[in-house]
Image 1 (cartoon, rainbow, N blue to C red):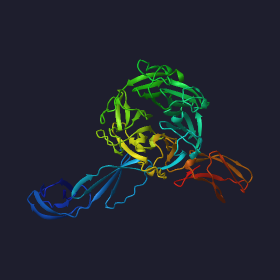
Image 2: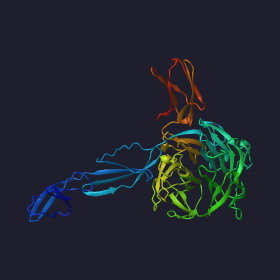
Image 3: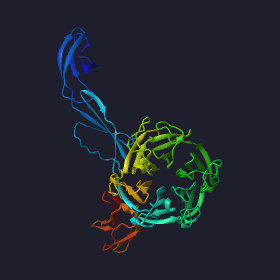
Image 4: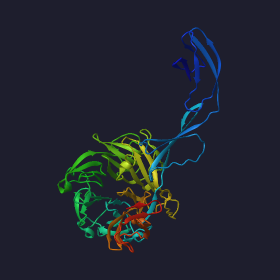
Length: 567
């Protein structure tokens, strides 16, 4: 409530809260009074009626009454992603229960929190609610049944209950099919090929399918340093093979020989012993971190086989580590992730981070003792989200386009693909669900929308490609969960004759993301469009009956029903 006193060209304001006040002014002066009412909502004020005023030589005492108007509600909806991006706020003065919010990113959890206020009451905050925008999902290889058959699409079979998945820079999917003792690839057209391992158990080195594998639980394709190679964790060791010849050798540890007490934990690559290993490369280098089942955090420094292993810290094992506090205890390691200069790892019921240089453990999400399901918003004191059995966590290639520290988790216990977005602090972030639902029967319903999808078999691992599409490994199948745009087409070359142009083209990414292609040819007085099939190998199309000595523009577009992609 503001009382303004104007004296000629000058003026003053006085904030008053009582129903009367006294202002001191100059004598023999005409005073013009404006009485205004302000409240927290910023809406039109109730009507004011002057009641009485008293004038003396140098003062005016003024009293008033207020006739309240009916309260007019105002609503504020705040939208954030992971609690970290700049909030988006929508103000509206309607009680409608339907409101559309656009320009959100697909496959991300958003926090919605409503506040309401009116002219007679203060703001009231609702509890935050998490919703995840939808993704599209398709099966690219495998099916319901276990097996080791190579083949195309649903004709292939897997048995990868504790395996892993990785996507290289050329969109080739690599699968650690551990129960079959194989490393396999899935091409962009869904062709499954056995590339490493004979299918028999063992640690025999050799080229490609002449080698033997025992229990490959992690796989990583290293292409940012030379030589390009595939690294994989076998039983108590890390093995590798050059991509040029797929000849398998032991990189670190002693295969089949677990640390049992007294063996070396630091030293030369093949002179140290590990437990069951999880490893994470530091991008752009040959260095890696390892964290194993005996609680040792180590770092491999150096290049190639001249590198050394250094023990950084040794943690104590406890299945009942504190839920809501930092500590030095770990439960069971299921995955290790290095992202944006931070080292994360997963346990069955939580996502945690190593804090350097003291090397303590911080719980980012989950951590409760009961294995169950709950999306939500985390806080440092109340880790309210729930996981049942996380088997794998992965980051994104272009993490700067998403909320900071965005990662996906394969929650096998809930048969769901979860997503975490958060900061570097403990319990600072949001957990949503990208895909999956609780199994309800043996009738495996597989709709296109990921959040309605019931997976065929237990979730094993996740991976991302260069376009941040997500690949999901089940025990018996591989799926692709993608953002709306299809894989990009590319015109490789075009050769012209007097009246024809021969166009060579390809698709950069999984063919399953493309329903068809269109080639548009245009000139000053000419335009045509033709539909082309998507193909795994470079395709060719000849445009004929063209005019000589004419410049033509070629535009190739891929489609999938949700949005085009051009070249």
